[in-house]
Structure formats: C-alpha cells, structure tokens
Image (cartoon, rainbow, N blue to C red):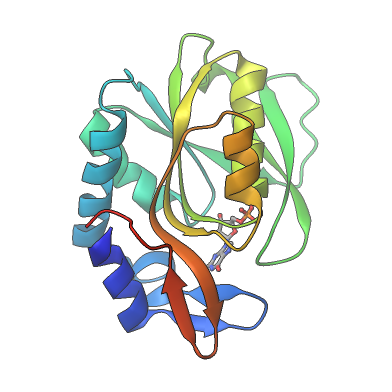
Length: 194
Ligand code: 5GP
C-alpha cells in the first residue's frame, strides 16, 4: 500500500538490530485516519470470509485492531501478557518470544471470549520472526475456532516469519512489505499494489 510505504519513508527510523521505529504514527502516537485506510484494505481482502472476531496481541496491535473491527462490525479480543499462572482452566495460554525486547512471555485469552464457532482474523502492527502471530494462531487452535487469516501493517520480509507461516497455510495480507533495511535506506518489495 503506497500510502503506508510513503509514510514509513517519511517518518520511520531504522534502528540497530533490524528494528523500524514508527512511533510517530503507529506505535506511540497513532494516526487514526491512516489506520482507517489500512482497515479498509484488510476488509477488502477478507470481506467474504465471515469474520466475526478480531484477535490481536497487547499492546501495539490494539489500536489497529479496533479500527479494523469497525470495518468488520465485530468485537476485538486481545491476548493479554501475564505473569500469573492461571490454573483454574478458564484461559487459553501460549508463550511468545518478543522480537523487540528479546524475552519470552505468556499471553492469555479467556475461554469465554474465543469460541469454537468463531471465525477469527488476526491483526498486528509488525510481522518479523513470526512469534507473535504464531502465538495467536495457537490460541485460535486451542479454542477450536476457525482461523481466517492475518492482516499485518508492516512485514519485514528479510525475517523468516511471513514465509514460514504462509508455508504452513496461513493467509497473510501485509500492507507494506520491506525487502531490506539499513542505515543507507529502506527498500520495499517491488510490485505491491498502490
Ligand atoms: P515477531 O513476533 O514477528 O518476531 O515480531 C512481531 C512483534 O514484534 C510485533 O507485535 C511488534 O510489536 C514487534 N516488532 C517486530 N519488529 C518490529 C520493528 O521493526 N519495529 C517495531 N516497532 N516493532 C516490531
């Protein structure tokens, strides 16, 4: 999506270790008008899939997921990071390795909000090594719900997550796909639609 690519080129900052900082419009200050355009693209891609729930992960996916949910007319569920052991069986739990922080943490969703009848679209801001998305896929699997696919704002294609998850059969619609990134500049995958 050309508009998102242009915004990344204008306001994004490349940091050490393959991290793109987009705090000006995505990860800290949020450009809700831009979010709305991203949401429309995801809706266009998944409008025939009877999505009735959007699942994201705390914290930076939540804003995007809420605007996307308005397009789909459905609720948003976000996987919560937790340090407490939930032993009463009321939640699904999975482990996620954080790309940006380098630690491993548990995320949970309450069983009462993720049902076998749900048709779930995953939404997240970035796709890098794929751990966050994989964790969300695992929660959907545990619930016996149907996984429709994933809408991602920025995919870093030089990291292996996207290729691996697509090979496993996940449909992923990424709106900006970065081929390479360094201090010298940032190159998008050619041929992406306007
Ligand atoms: P993955 O689990 O695919 O390795 O990483 C995805 C998660 O890490 C996203 O939810 C996002 O919050 C964070 N992330 C990964 N790469 C970047 C990046 O380059 N910039 C920012 N701001 N977040 C990233």
